[in-house]
Image (cartoon, rainbow, N blue to C red; front, top):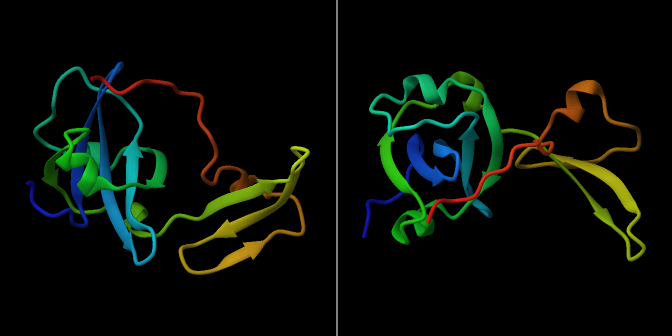
Amino acid sequence: MSKRTKIGDVVQILTSKGVSYAQVTHKHLRYGHLLRAFDGFYADRLDNFSEVVASPVFFSAFFPVQKAVNEGLGANVGNSSVTDANSVFPIFRTSARDRDGRRGPLWLWNGETEVMLTRGLSNEEKEISGPRDHQCTLAG
């Protein structure tokens, strides 16, 4: 069994496009570890993660990191300080769809408070947790 997951842990993920990295930046009482996956793929494993953890975040998601590492789906390859930018809990946006597929109101959540928007998204809010047009598959 591997060591317990902690804030700052860097996880290596093997994908069809190369090696990718993510970092554990927070632990939420209800949802567990928040993983920040970084944009970019590498041909080989890195030894120094300071540049990676300062690179743009591709996406943020709650993820069962410990279980994934224990099952070999990723590897805890080090620990690095969380950057100032990534130490701030991200704001997530979501909405629900009704039975006919119509989208309901948008909600913003900062890890503690959920707010329903009664207006359209601002330009800044449009960037929050939005989908990206990158696809890859886990190597296996």
